[in-house]
Length: 378
Image (cartoon, rainbow, N blue to C red; front, side):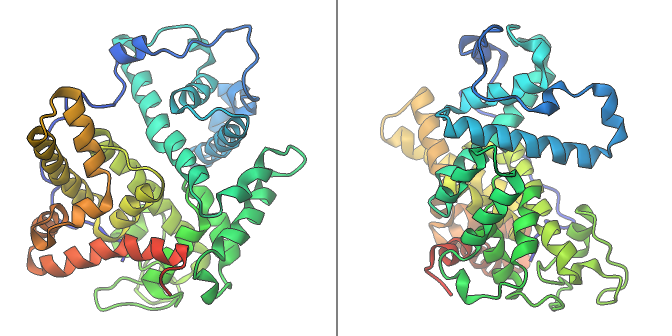
């Protein structure tokens, strides 16, 4: 189910640790990536960096943001293929393409909005892209994206066809593969294989199924989540219910994954640790099923366990914080301990009447999705 923490207020989360990896004005000054105005950039910044701001209102805000993300992904892929793999450098590349007037200007506390934007680019664009390209799941097939003779969309579609057949996914229908390949544009870094596996997990590709709790369609949207991604519901199961239309529900699922990733970046990853690679998508898909509030609370519980373990090992200061963040960034660590595990306690908070059931469901959900992509589950 496209999970939502319905009618339950997210619990108060502990403050960001003093030694958090989130960039502040102080650390930004210490590690500023200086761009020489006279030096050629690694890659073309893209037309979006030179677009007149007055033209932006001509596009709907959502379409303009989507177009900008599309161009920024092209820039990142080209830069990575040219050898730039440092997240700090890649974040600067995108940030200064958006704000060329800030080149050479140190970011201080007076630029808090820009510092927040820099952190957002790092957490929600650069790291997911690096995770995807480093991921063994079809990653080698992204090589064609740097070839200017090929259109980005064509290259992505070619890569998508391979990815969707990864692991044991070739046992499933290919009827919706083209929709899936296009839908991943709504969620930077999302592999078509992961999205297809999620749909297999949710509905086994039955587009009109409605479960006993009212979740409907190929992506099993509830009413709240459907409205959040722009799907009309109307009378459940009627012709007006867009949850039952795969051409709309599948892109909606990708948009919801993007929303979950952004929220986790804000309330969990920035505080407790940044998962990498396959681990990143385990956390995001778990939030699709059980809600980002549940996952964030579970990460917080795991972080405190990791911090205690670090201190037992004699670690202090930044060493202890780094250990705790790594510990909280591994999905299995959230599950360890059964109903008393970090995830079990979070499930009890958000789903008190079915805590054990939800612990098992949310805990196994991302593991099964990734296992299917890798060929370990049918």
